Length: 292
Image (tube, rainbow, N blue to C red):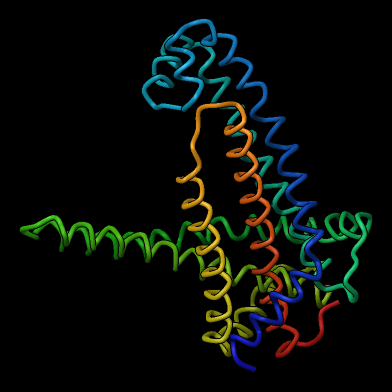
């Protein structure tokens, strides 16, 4: 089966489970409100009574953030701590929701109830969380051993250039190399998650080794399917940016339209997240056995 056929099958599977995208969006929206609302109220309380503050509230800016942090130096460690805590909670939340996505995609039938979704979230959480901890040093090693030397070579080459074009080209290559390397690692751990859910294996290291053998024998097909899903995400992002650029801003009604378009994009990103797993599961089903 070609990678295009697998992608189409994955797209159909993701569309049949499209309700999961709405559930993911709802969870992320509630989480964002809990994190952003206190900060927004604090900024509004401090700056809403001045003309400068009115301009500041419309668009975040590094300079006023720096001035604000200097003014409230004692509160800066607390704010940074809250931001780091929010990032940690978001990472754990992502691990938790991944169980519901993979479990839901593996269930037969189009309908996955909310109870089934959260049951799968809890069922696979500890396995996926241990895998998450294992993945952190792997990402660091990949960036340190592969990306940094490559980036150093590109920087050395661009510094000797007589025009700015080689520097721009080298910067694009650095970004592309980083995205591809992170994508490779992400794809590998996606298949480990699928294997943990499919075979019911609780041993993360053993499943990682089995997945390495599975992916190495089918690397180009697995990588091709992953890139097609990534291309769909890139096209979605380009569409969002183009429409967002055309939308005028300034009046309350237009702000509502911009906000609605942003939320539609976030919903699309959740569907894209499901699509990645769906295409990988289709490949896994074809070559590695039926998923639960």
